[in-house]
Amino acid sequence: MTDWSTETLHADYAQSLKVGTLIYDSETEHQRLRVFENGTFGRVLTLDGVVQVTEGDNFIYHEMMAHVPIIAHGAARRVLIIGGGDGGMAREVLKHRDVTHVTMVEIDAGVVEFSKEYLPGISAGAFDDPRLELVIADGADFIRQTAGGYDVIIVDSTDPIGPGEVLFSDTFYGHAKRALTDDGILVTQNGVPFMQGEELTNTMRAFRALFTDATCYLATIPTYAGGPMAFGWGTDGPARSTPPEVLRGRFEATGITTAYYTPEVHAAAFALPGYVSKLIP
Ligand code: SAM
Image (cartoon, rainbow, N blue to C red; front, side):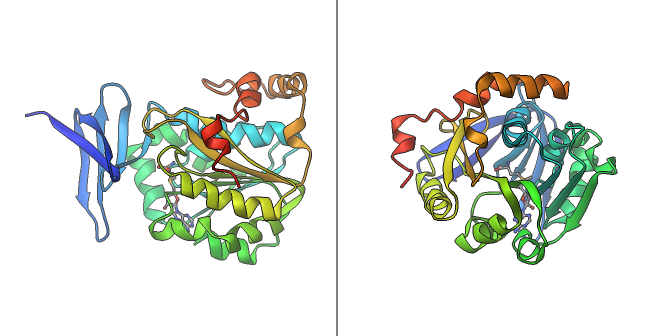
């Protein structure tokens, strides 16, 4: 009989992925962790049936969270990643040769070790890059204590349940702002607005109180079902108004190859449909 992995994150909507070869399946103390091979998406990691990352479509999520703020900033040297245990975000950030230091703060050492073993293609060697400093700690504790000085902070978190919940609090956002340089940029994973609108509204309310430029931008990621995903964007700098030709010049100068990000997609991602704008207070 065909085995399907069914995600029931949302009350009235589910998606299923066919489990080709089951590679890992274990009931941990807290959750069921599975890795399986799917014909379309390659290796898929689920926690309690909720897709965390797939080999096939992670490039969209990671490219859009890493390159949009770094290219828009134009001179990012120090980057902080909160969460990101699978290593895909570090992979994209470290493609920027001008980035001299990346701090990655992941709460669960097990996610890092597991990803290295079962999903090595996601981090693609990022954990061996000498510019990467891996800190195993709660991102909220870290950010309260750090001296800061980050040009870009990327919050690559789980949904706002369990350990990830604190990464969606006003207090956390306030500390994140303090950890940024004057023109630094904060970007956050904010779920799928059609399905998780309140999550976006809450983050945007906090960002509006903290930053002179607070909005979100969008990308469509097939396994995050229900429409485009939103990424929170907060800065006191002028990065969002960088002209498209300047974005293109900066991107070409990096020599980076991407499969989703282009400077044109970057600019267009900030154009919001009416139903998303309505969610921003
Ligand atoms: N993109 C995925 C999604 O939304 O389905 C999630 C990415 S996954 C890399 C998120 C990571 O955040 C997990 O490895 C988790 O352990 C980590 N995380 C959750 N809460 C955290 C916290 N308070 N501090 C640091 N990392 C945390």
